[in-house]
Image 1 (tube, rainbow, N blue to C red):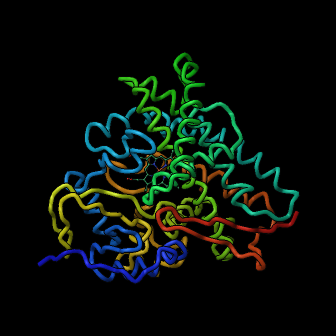
Image 2 (image 1 turned 90 degrees about the vertical axis):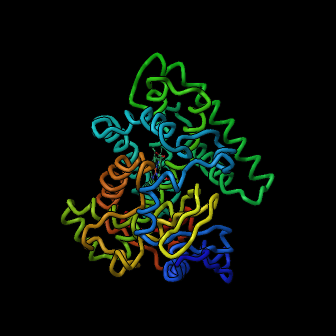
Image 3 (image 1 turned 180 degrees about the vertical axis):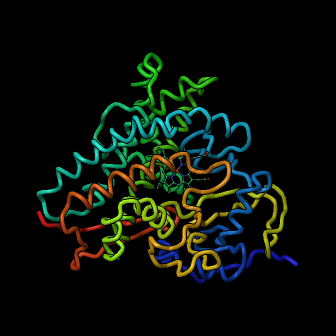
Length: 393
Ligand code: HEM
């Protein structure tokens, strides 16, 4: 017998932002789907339920014409199903191929990383959010997209304004204005380089889009580039900081990875499992259905909390601990199914093989500051918003 989703109404939104994990655990232990009033959404938090949902895109659709993402960014393949999704996804695929990552992006990203870390090394202390992770994620995404060079802060601001706009359920006019302004800036930046990419095919995402068969229409190029800016900057930034924090807070694990560099990939996967940069993404129920113990009505919006599923104790032992030695098991930090993150391999390479290893190699005796602890925030997107560190200059 299934019944309607239970309701949790005694949680404050601020608690979700500060530390969602106790709330996620409560939701997981309550039912397979629970309406959480503070989030104004029915949340799914168990690992097996999310896998089941992602295997059934007919019942659980990514398509939602009324979503704020569509309003702020336009018609994107990330919010489509079936053939429409596959066409968009196939168009960008050449920029994400393993050969392209190895031969083209790896040397470019190593150069950016080297420049940023060298410029830091004499200082002896920094907040790695602004000093390394945000510029690294912004400058490398700028190159991947195929934009002309611009200050890293510009792309980072555009990304933030789009994200704020996509989550602007309260319809705040100022948030809406900034999101639209970011959108116009992005449209102009695309316009400035499109002829160049048409004339000179290259590995960038814009080049892949205009040389796809059939070429991607301009309004879809605009929308999909916005989704990539909204979704391809914060996540690698947060993964850089989370992996660094996990190792600094667990010195024995840090020593192991420095002595055995072949452990870096495990450390990266563990970091994004432990604090998943995307904590939740939405799906729409297309027909009344039973999810384990709960009946979901047609048309219901649900939030798939991969950040919760990645700490599901039915799947991971001691899930709240950062442990690079835990038995290797797949996680959901990059999603699952047809919309599995296009940037997975490039992020594995950039974060787990280039930036963070270079950081520990170049900055001697890198350590957390006891007088300035790291700050971690968010539940839809989660990561350190401040990571103050010291090293021997
Ligand atoms: C650690 C870094 C990253 C994490 C944790 C991450 C996570 C995710 C997740 C969970 C999804 C699924 C969203 C959904 O189904 O609604 C997704 C989709 C996507 N990601 Fe990432 N992402 C990361 C980095 C990147 C980067 C660097 C790029 C681009 C340069 C990127 C591009 C995309 C695209 C295009 C999609 C949509 C795929 C589709 O709909 O087929 N991601 N990502």
